[in-house]
Image (cartoon, rainbow, N blue to C red; front, side):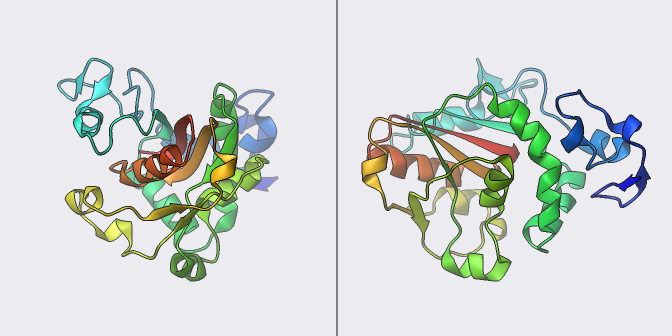
Length: 230
């Protein structure tokens, strides 16, 4: 009998079937924990995956993305981001254990969901949001690259990142006002290519838009992204 990777409770395989195709991966998490992962469903922003409700949108874009696209410095760089889950308190704790406390095995939880989403995405090249050397030394691994590796994706490192203060410590305004933190290292690979960028969390969209801007200015045709949550 296997144990849930999140709560460590014993579980019966019969309780955690999702589909025959996803069964092997899905048995890493019990039914109770799986139900606490809040999928983004229904109407969502076509650019960032934010759930659309009430007055939070105009057409198929949320107000945040409208502000980005009306800003001449950022318009047209990130085509769209697909996020899987709402960043609720339960998921915050899982990601904290994974990202900051080094519980690498927790990445496996998300693989079935990511595989399902990737089936509908077209791309030429995959890359991951890099960590700065300081952050990589601190954590011991790149959480986005770990997801890509478990998915079996062949990624290309085309970006480097300079050291900055942790994003989690910054306000929304401070994040949006950040200067460019990415540098493209392999321009020759990007010409007229559709790039898929992998990251863990979409917060304000600043990180992904900075990466998309650097990639498109270096020759990429289109940049989209997939993240676990927003």
